[in-house]
Image 1 (cartoon, rainbow, N blue to C red):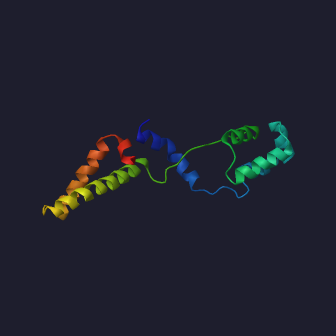
Image 2 (cartoon, helix red, strand yellow):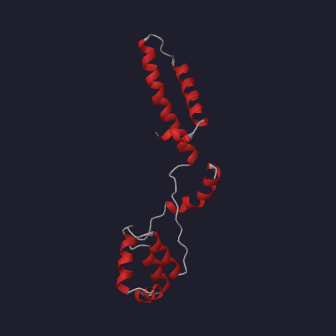
Length: 146
């Protein structure tokens, strides 16, 4: 999947990611909104009510397993939506990382050149930085994260 396709897929999740979850957790909030008791939901899950209480607490503190959460969602006729939502667009994250790596690389080179009396001016440094960023972006992105 291309970066653009992935960003397009993730775009709707951006609005969700900025929302806060109910302090008691989604299970309890949805269950109560439906007017369903713990006992009724536990019965749908074929579990003991005490087990459901434990699962609700785990979900509220973010320690529930995804398969358990999916099972509960299905029992309440809900869809579990799961995604990692980048805080910035992926292409921006990649470009910023390439710039960080390029600056680090050029800093070492510039230091050596200054010791030899061959340091670059401000404009030359900016052009060298842009060339290094483009070189990094045109190669394997894996190298950006080493």
